[in-house]
Length: 205
Image 1 (tube, rainbow, N blue to C red):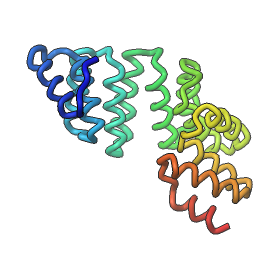
Image 2 (cartoon, rainbow, N blue to C red; image 1 turned 45 degrees about the horizontal axis):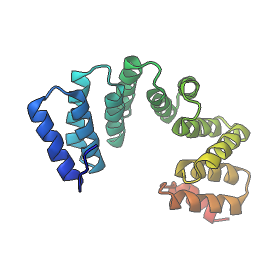
Image 3 (cartoon, rainbow, N blue to C red; image 1 turned 90 degrees about the horizontal axis):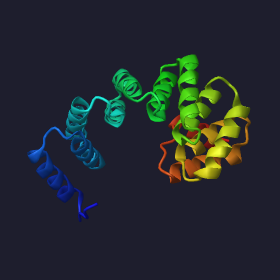
């Protein structure tokens, strides 16, 4: 791996490689990731599209495109790209986790449950899918199961903000207000944007 002092040099180097071979999907993918780290979504998207066009089995490119769609609030686009990723690589857990997340956002709890179970069957250590599954459990009112899952996540990844947020929801449900307050503090500390409504409810107690 060559060493670059900054992301711009790295992008320039990759551009040089594309000038020689514009059909290399790996180079398009890498430059897309580099643009993504600069939050340059438009350039990232065009390179991920090139990567997918040159290598239709590159599931990661579809997953990244799904992430960009979600960033724009385009849930349908996010779903479509992740479905393509799952078709390209059926045993890749990530798209199934993302599909489950979108289904849950759309209120399709049964479908979300199936997709998340599939993701966790393919990769039982997939933290993001575990967290989404805990959100699903909260949605359907199974707080006990959600709590168990969250404890497991936080033992492994104590700095995972979304899990602290979900833990706060469960504590608030059980009216353990001090614990809930501590959880939203943790969620915020680890960069998760806690919903204002939840924060107000907890702080009012």
